[in-house]
Length: 122
Image: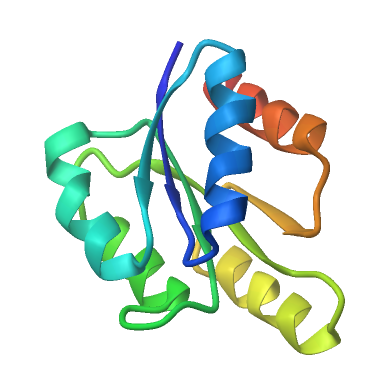
């Protein structure tokens, strides 16, 4: 399957992503913020990165911009709280930056599995 990195400051969400994607045969690397994720990127070379937008230290938009500079650049799924229209605006910004998929929190595990499978197939 694939190496997938999850970058999110919410430990419970990271555990959910690890459990969900590992059950589907993926190797999952965790980072709690963009700074750590960018440091781990060249070590693990994930095919897909799932990144939150609102995080301490290096936030998601900057993280996405810097990941797009890597060659080969991973495919990116941007996630953000879906309960507030302000957070959905961040997903629009992420789309404009060229992310391959977005998910509004809270999302169902099946939605994440489907997004990862779609990116791997495409």
